Amino acid sequence: MLKQFTGALALTLTLGVLALGSVQAQDASNPRINAVRVVYSEVNALRDAGKLNMVKKDVAGCKGVNESRQMWSDAAGNVRRYQTKDGVYTFEYTYDNTGVLRYLGGLGNNGQGQKITWRYYFNEKGGQVWYDYQSQGSRSSWIDAKTRLVKNPKDAFEKTPTC
Image (cartoon, rainbow, N blue to C red):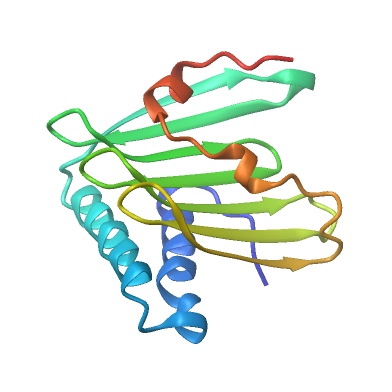
């Protein structure tokens, strides 16, 4: 069902479809969810219009696992999207124009048939308003995606992994 995608656009499209579509069955009329959808769509529109500056950094991680980091900022220098990708996990963070984390989408694929998708929605103060995951295979081997929350993407982008 889920495929391992390459490239930021494919990931954004995948997480975007999940972000904007999967909640409908659960809570379609919830204004808090819809507010996150608006921010997510706004960031995609800015990116698609070429109004976000993207920087990329590859970081040597622990145990031979490298991590790719991408950060998209607006003209005022506000980070609007941050993405990390290693051999197993991809996380995409979307921020509003005040820098508050509003959406975290994640994909995990261990290459052995076990896959997972996470979605976290946050209000304008950064408080969690909704969470969901879908998995194939055993979930016991997955990390807790919430341990990967990034509230300050500029610091996270520069951080050296600790082993």
